Image 1 (cartoon, rainbow, N blue to C red):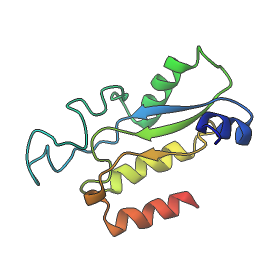
Image 2: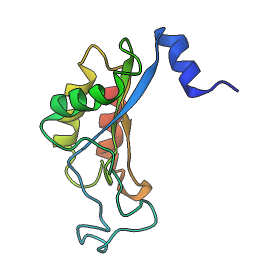
Image 3: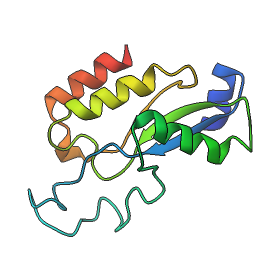
Image 4: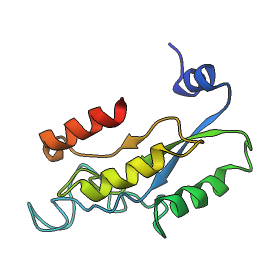
Length: 131
């Protein structure tokens, strides 16, 4: 079985890092939609390691600076980590994802979500981004 890091290196010829960024969303068990205080899907601090300041490019640049010392020629996977990225209106999230995808150093994106917060519209838009 090949490790993910080896797979990415074989595709892009360099180390690929996941950069945690703030997707601008909360969760139905934090915002009162279903409850308050969180649930078993995430820890109290889901997204504690995500960059949270500035627009998506600022967040990615700041996260990149944390790992660039390890490998200056790496590529990146923006990880929309905090809470449930597909909860609620997803237009703003997909605008951020489009910005992240257009960066030269981005090779993929990753999205944190819950199975009960993945509406058909989000699935359709993720499929479009995948193309």
